[in-house]
Length: 73
Image 1: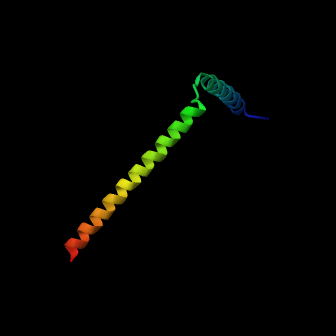
Image 2: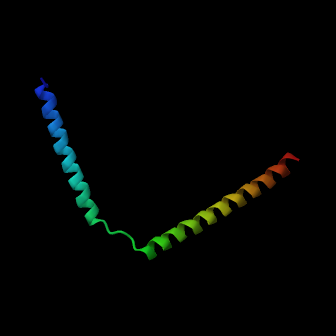
Image 3: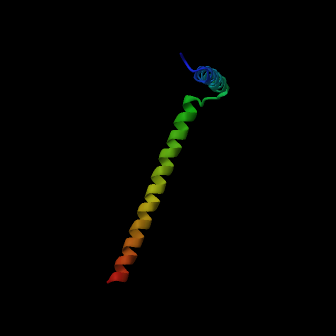
């Protein structure tokens, strides 16, 4: 025979899970998704900023390498 406490916890978990999932569905209906144009623009911004930061880091590395080589000699 099943323990009454376990059966009650299982039912409570099931009810909580259903409530959680209905809340998730409700929130997803409120989300305003970006348009295709916005998504493309955001993607391009991320790519451009990533390239700019990588070039900046490369230049810093280059300058510090040259400076250290001058100090070591």
